Length: 229
Image 1 (cartoon, rainbow, N blue to C red):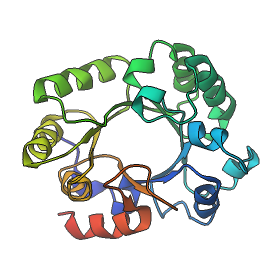
Image 2: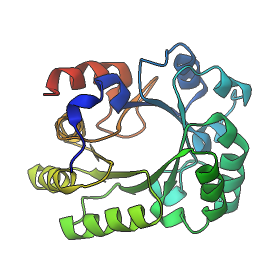
Image 3: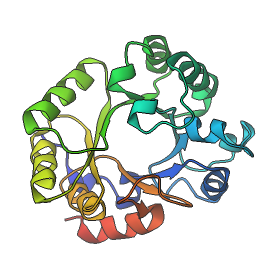
């Protein structure tokens, strides 16, 4: 049975991404009802200056931790072991954690701890060059679920209608929580259309975008509210 899209308010569908100290400060001004999660990008924050661990404690909405793999947009070229240590250090402050499908084996210990602590596990896949075939994406979805994903996240470069149609077909056929989103020329359009189609998580930025095609997070909340049935 497909999840009931009407059961989840627009704000709880949005993830506000904080990848700079300025973004973290903005997240501290949000309330628990302003968005579903604040994504704390540890790879980006630890590569810069001005970030302190206690800053996370002041964030109002639930925290989704990420330390992205360099091959999927990660900053700072962090090794798997370094990313795992960072995620383990901050996991007690998180309600969710995002690990790429390619990193599941390297992060097995972290995911076991997350399971024991009932931290939501997002298993993700990012393609910055294009949108793979529907068959390929369904296989990624299946493997992510087999790896223990509570929510599967798939983000691809959407350069035209065909790419968006593939993501829509994937979203429509999902029988478990799935977040789909586009980057690139049709990124903004795709995020509204896919949210209306049932995407469980929809990412926007707080102080500046990370990739082309993102909305400001609070504007995304408003626009999703307008397109939801």
